[in-house]
Image (tube, rainbow, N blue to C red; front, top):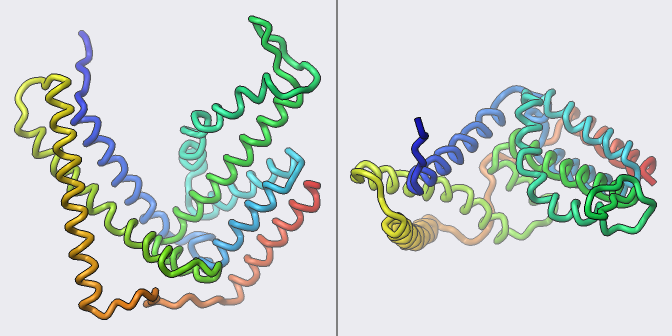
Length: 273
């Protein structure tokens, strides 16, 4: 018995639903009691940047691997399942980094290491270069994912003030994050209503027509929504400045963990050189 192929509408609906489920999953984790959830957001932002700098300045695979293990320990201490965390990072990582790593294996000059058919030779220098790139990208993605999963998005935006990020940039990020899910809900309702009125299988031309019409409607509604939201903000006294309802406060535990993570970053830089 042959399996029926899903049409474009079903793929779109499934993609939107999975995106909403992942966002809900992140909100649930950020509210759980854990190591990183209990720390000040400014500590996590600065520590993430310090670890990123340390990993990119380090010239030792052992040191970079040790930093990755530390990241996994922090994830487990924050009530994040290690298997799910690793899968989220490494599921799509080979598709993006492989474009750069695979040519580097063969084109980087160095002593030959592995001989393949058709005269292809993997050099030792190319393999080491690929490992450096793969580990650095995986740690960068892991740190970003760890920050997002353990910190509410509004708190992350509030913590960006310590890095002197302009208010316009913070407001743009906040508005984008807040209303992109509303647009996803609207798009999901549109495709579900369309699918409930479709009988039989649509042709490729009909599916493209429906997708184009839905994209046009969604763009029109997003433009109207942005105008209405801006007028509502102006009527409530919006002046372009970011106002934080819950000010961030550092305690002794935040200072201790911040010092430990910064010390770890400094040690990685020293040992990696």
